[in-house]
Length: 242
Image 1 (spheres, rainbow, N blue to C red):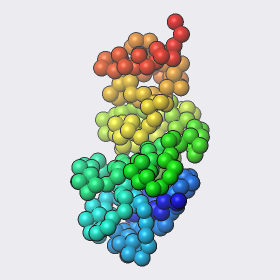
Image 2: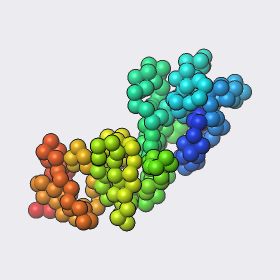
Image 3: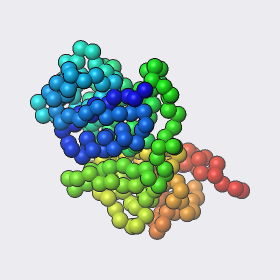
Image 4: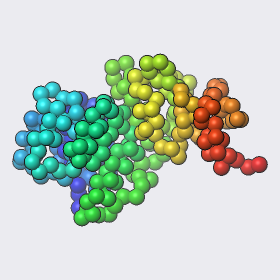
């Protein structure tokens, strides 16, 4: 049984990303896309949908106001760049709260949560391995007033600066983004990435050398924070031969 999805966002790029993600999962079907809450209300009055992905900050009615005006709301996943609405969202019994930029893996976890809470839709998806190859996984991050696509395989490490983060790539380029390092960490797989310092996340498979105080990736020495030492070394020693 296909899950009919409606995506609501005032940004075309955000709509395109969600549409692309939905298209990669066989059990999902895009029912429609709307750029504001009023159009979404009209759409849902005419068309039955099972799951909606809705932004919060939109002109006219906000996503929160839309949800409050739905008498028989379908399952809801909020997609937003603003974490401060999380409590209000969950008070409205939303299924999940996705912070932009949204990685496909994090999106997939939300979809799997929908399946686990709606057992009439089967089968439940256990992982996304058959839907996305490692070399194809990517995220979008906001940089210079646009959203930039970054393949996860290309990331060496991420460094937090005062008001932004630098994503260092294998070709030695850097992507500057206003996203916080904690926000980026939340959408990365713990299997592939590790926070080693309050200011650094590293790609585990890009490590060349490490010791108790630092990690060597490409031409960079990444410090291991004192509060992270025990965890980082325990994880890396699991992959070590003594």
